[in-house]
Length: 308
Ligand code: SF4
Ligand code: SF4
Image 1 (cartoon, helix red, strand yellow):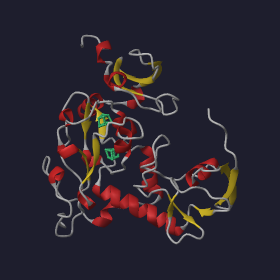
Image 2 (cartoon, rainbow, N blue to C red):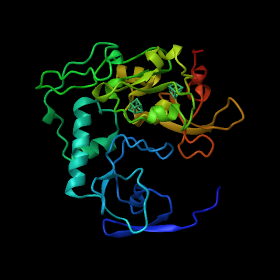
Image 3 (tube, rainbow, N blue to C red):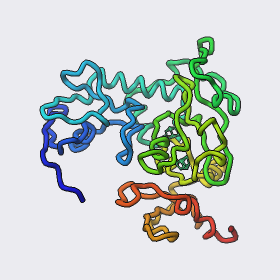
């Protein structure tokens, strides 16, 4: 453990004073008071990407709304988290996302925010037809054309199923950058994926859109571990969902230590019907912070009876 903070700062959030260590963010100040701030692109183990803008709050003296996830709490700051302007901004962010991206697997919290902010995806019209397989992957920057009006443009496209380890369903991708950060300097330092394209045609891509198995990807699965929407998913989970038999209420999660090497990564083994269906790692593990290598993440199928 490093030395504790040298100083503390006090900020006022919705009329209540929060005392946080110097360098803490407004998000941390809000959370210290149990004030919920919705986030999509934020994860405590990653550098804030400031991508989703769902966490915006009003900061007195600031002309624009500020992202709570990355704005440092400065002594004397006065913050409002639930004003008309904040609610309007969050509602619009969620409406733009849900009109163009499939958020159905983004978790109950996101569904709750949809209700809380009275999100109406239909405000943008019925969804435009999905893109053909691979078509979005080759769009050129700046060449996006409106679809003629009356329909909401979407990122809908066929799922990429290229191997037995994980799938990429970019119809569910909100471009939060978490996978890019986990693959890059926040964890894996492999830099196999990045954002290609611009504007509405921006997408997650390997270098030159190479197939995953010909890219720099080492199949650590750390991108799956941080994806908030189910865009990146274990193939095992994907198959069970397709069959309609994925059932988290029937699953147990057992914490253990990865058996492969001496690092000692913690594994959370998810089991359904006496079969391992996926392996994750706890975010608060001091060695791995939720990240694993290919062996810990995927190397468990040998345990299943009758499989190699
Ligand atoms: S599996 Fe690992 S190396 Fe491959 S894209 Fe995901 S984070 Fe990067
Ligand atoms: S694939 Fe998932 S983690 Fe990556 S940008 Fe899209 S939503 Fe975020």
